[in-house]
Length: 330
Image (tube, rainbow, N blue to C red; front, side, top):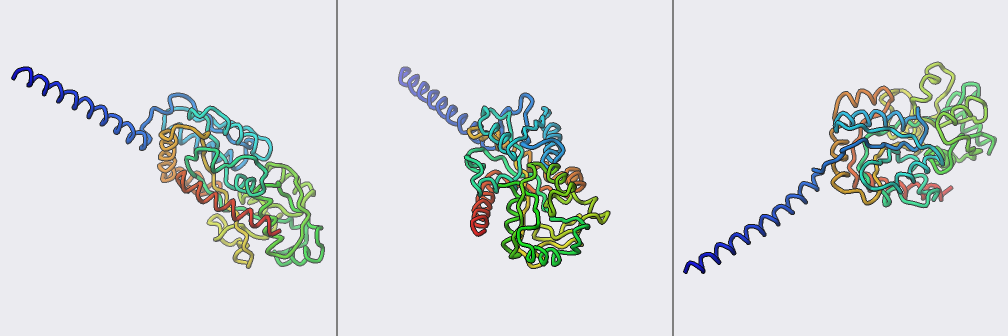
């Protein structure tokens, strides 16, 4: 009787140990799914695949400051320019997937590079995407006042009468390339598409120096020239007027379907612990709702827009397909 009771107690204890073990594993999985992981425990490198001073660099530094404050660990912006953003992007893709190297890039170049097969990798499949945090819908196409054109109609009339003569500053396989292609397609014109430098500063220098007649750039980069009257605006590449300059017409309002927004995204090397990816994604969502972050972006005519990793990949994949069709229609 005593022996039987001991056996029953032993089996009960064993069952409780097994259940406790299973419950522990389940709790660990649940915690991991929520991003409950000890990360970061040291400084994190936020790689910007462009030179310092551009829009991507500016937004990366704003986000890095927010992340540093949130996690109490330093997020260091590292500029790795080259190959129109490809060098730095590839460096992150091949980095150790330990959570301490993150790509801060934008959909404008990434989707266009895939659509034109400028890259031999996939931004949507070869990374672990944490999400989107900033959006800039202010891509503005300008010409100099000295051109003699007063508006878009004047430009189109000249371009049609002089096919191939208008020099358009672009980067092949980038958003500037896409905008130029859409202008040609929708307006029925032919421009001289010139690669005059990968960075916004280089394209601006070429434009100001007389090497190009038409420039597409973030509104922030051309705002002062527009306000002084040195540049005329042909159109803004957005669905709706810019809050920063609501009186400047979009291409769509003038009858031309040319839209090119830039979404700034954070991506880890593929194979990074999903719990780390989720933890960063949650932080991005929280930052996007902070009033001071919104105010900081307004100074640069940008807005906070959060998309989780899955939605970012889904929408960017569609954008790649749409761009590829546009390039093939040319």
